[in-house]
Image 1: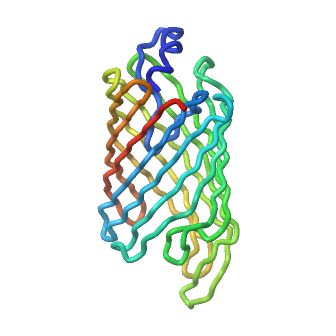
Image 2: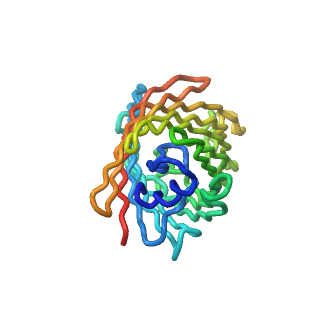
Image 3: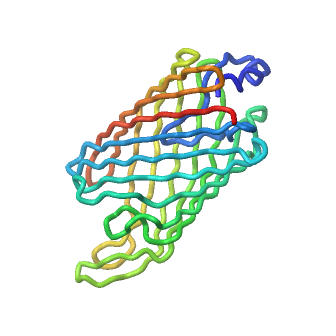
Length: 261
């Protein structure tokens, strides 16, 4: 929150500005004591399948800023809306290992992926999964902040189908690393660029595990509005996903409400 950073900004002699509210890259700032955040994301990919994904996340501090619990719900529309419905639920725990007063903020996260989405329609993984991420954040100056992420997912026993119609089960997963640079153009206006490199595994037609590489680039803008104790942050991005198969362009909408309770 803007108001909560005033003391830190004075201590480091940086100007006051929004530092969280990233889109694809996770910042390393846990929720402050008795402050909750509600985050809505929507992305529409302008590929032949016209894919749409909406997610809703709530983040809660556990007694203080050191521990944070959150959950994420999702709704997906795939294959030109032939397949649509709710996706897997993700439960998250994050520990504030280092704060802004240190050289950099660090907040490792551990997540459990609950298979509530219909896997046959591509809406979920069909198995219980585990995800981990280590975000780090650093305020460089009055005008610039950087965030970096390293993480991965493990999905044991995911069902796949060979070209001959034989069902197989494989342990799949992903590894990713990303970075974002944020320009604090004004106190309430930020421009930034996020980039993520991902190695994602899947089952090929022979029943073997194959690895696909993708790069996501997201130029984006966000704006903060303070109304008493309520902070509202809308934002927009234009993600480009590059793989060995195709290049997909999308539009991303972000909306956050953050307030004391």
